Length: 129
Image (cartoon, rainbow, N blue to C red; front, side):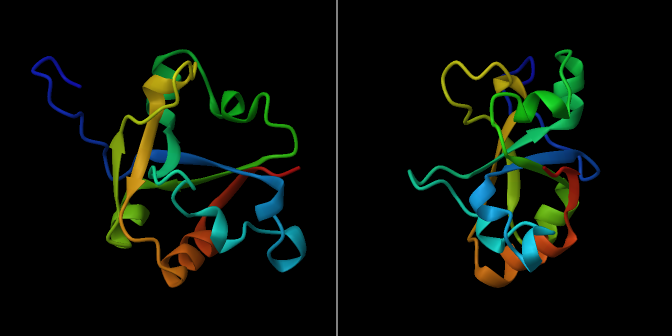
């Protein structure tokens, strides 16, 4: 939130990081994430991402997103790619106690298989065990 309590907009060129559990690293023989990795949480909360610029502001990096998540991959994409799918990205929604919570954002919008597949094909692998 800004000084007036309004949500801080996330720029179109903002880099977003998404953790990919091992079970979703199986597409194309494990060389890319499955489209199912880009869905909302089973509890109904929006798909989680971390905003790189905010991570850097709080003295963290992409590495911190996967610390403690053995076997997880990490991919990146920009906010404009999310918005091109008629999704939106908004800060907030971090789990209680998340040390990276200030950089956490949710991706809102209907996650159809075709849109999930598109982001799965176009994202960049950052950490890929």
